[in-house]
Image 1 (cartoon, rainbow, N blue to C red):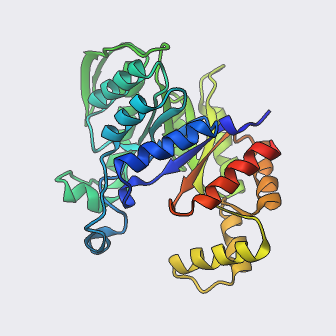
Image 2: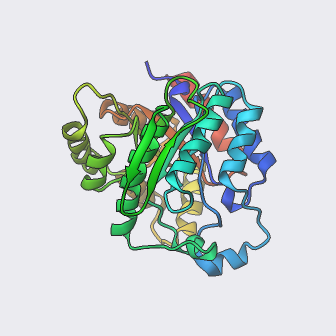
Image 3: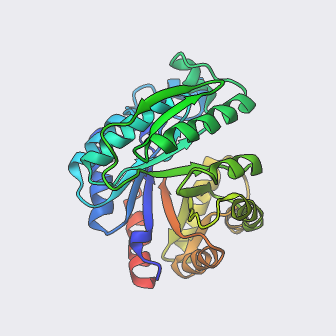
Length: 319
């Protein structure tokens, strides 16, 4: 049975959210019986140099510092980064960070690792931003190091980009840290299938997802279970007029002149959940039927708490 604890909230603190607000969202999610709270691992607001200058007064609290606070302030909810770029932290150090928080929180840590994509924040902090081909190889090496260490094993590895000869302490609280990988390219899916516990997809059209699911099923070791989850933005409304208003606002933010109906169709065909509560539930059920097991709802406008409350009420009453 699908329940609200099979869902989580995903927040974007780099866009101007204080540490206290991060904690408050985590406490809200825990109180409402969500199973997960995730946050992005970005060092700067999105949009590049010009946009960052416009948002210069916004706070952008560092991801792993805030995760430590969330671990201390919550009791039951699982938490983590969605996802940490491999170029920000050496994979062996990242694994130790994850195991430390996992041990402290009694096994609630979820570690997501990805290739990274936001060039400006890399260069602004003095990190190299290599071509995707290199970043893909880096994350493949990162998967191997992180997997072994977050299973409490000693790793002996020398790669082209990373090396590690160390045992991870403290040990994970429950044998291993839950490890998440994401990706839409068949090669990345084939690689992550060897290592991760969960394959997470950002909003994706159903036909594309089903093709990649075949790749995952063919690539994962026999008897290995990999959870399939989706993270992404959403729109839910009580009435037609409220939905139209939210669609107009979202379309304007994306610089499109599509009508609300056209924009909704575009969002849904692209894999997003969007509609009145009844439509929303129907779309969610279709994704569940296709094999997606958990959903992490991306809160792009923290000021629209009313929409998150409606989401929460819908999940509690319809499932």
